Length: 118
Ligand code: HEC
Image 1 (cartoon, rainbow, N blue to C red):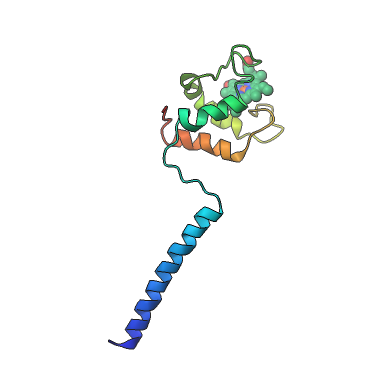
Image 2: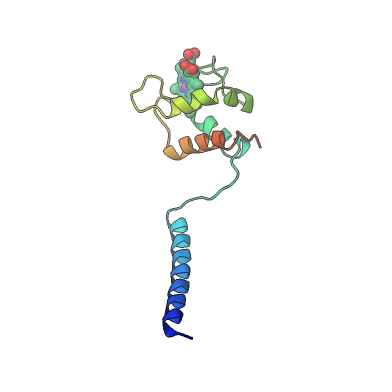
């Protein structure tokens, strides 16, 4: 076989193996969690209970907007996604003292993937 062609083939194989390796390494090293299912019961409920229901419950300060179950959360989801992205200092920011971006993104992702309940 022509040695130039052979060299090109080997280079391509090395490049492919190299790119696979480095992608795998990056996925692990950046701590990216690859989950294809996101649901209210799985992730969202815990976030809302940690960040919101202290006020958004029948006995809390924001009892007019309870967020204690799937129906109550999905009913207001567009407003929720608006308010949780407000910057510090915005009077409507929810929760008023903010929450981590990872949790904000989880809720946005949940909406985009169809608001699965379980
Ligand atoms: C420290 C208390 C507190 C926390 C924590 C809190 N809220 Fe609120 N929230 C309020 C108060 C007070 C109001 C105003 C309620 C009213 O108008 O009766 C409000 C209003 C809202 C409203 C309705 C606002 C509107 O104008 O439509 C939504 C939606 C909301 N909050 C979502 C959330 C979400 C989602 C979280 C958690 C990520 C959260 N809140 C955390 C106190 C809180």
